[in-house]
Image (tube, helix red, strand yellow):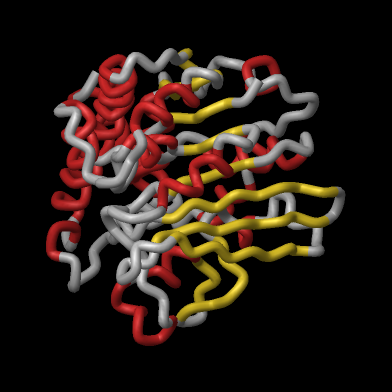
Length: 297
């Protein structure tokens, strides 16, 4: 059985990749943030990992394909997060940094944001992978996972990518076990968004919408609610295309049983958590969370 994983952000995508690698299973990730659009596929082999990256050239519409084999044991090494790329751009080893439009003159690379050309030609390779993370891109929906903007596109059945072979994609997805995540522990979700990896800027004089505590709490509260709504938006989208799915409770369900894995890691072993930046004393943050739970049951 092969799997597809639909979720907002903050839904265990990193630790899931590590578990699939640890069980010698292949992995595909479609971009989970702002376009340009890309896919990265990875194949573990003992102490090495083979990577394939795909994106569409924005000028020619042709599919671009690069490869790399990393001959090190990179399992559970947060340096090799899902967006890792072997050549640095502006000092960052990131496929996202490589494809940013502002870096086109540096990199000579121009990635497409709407995929009107050949990007879909990588889908056949994605469907060979044991798990596909964020298949929404394959249905024509791209953007920051969990945000209201992308959620509205899903609710309105209004894809923002152009050249998508939708009948082929729907047919192939229905041959897989499609997983939609559900986060039951809202307190933990709130904590992840207030202080977790990739949290919003806080008290930054250049970021006006979070330059005070009040504005920061308001903005994160909005984001938490959008994440909660996004779970329902995914289901609305899959129902519209008649794609079958199962719900996976991130707090209670068993990864080993649900994904047929011999060995799994616990959330406590997720070393990406070590990158969290505690922006205020813990009692202040817990107070924010208490207020959120009270006002948003």
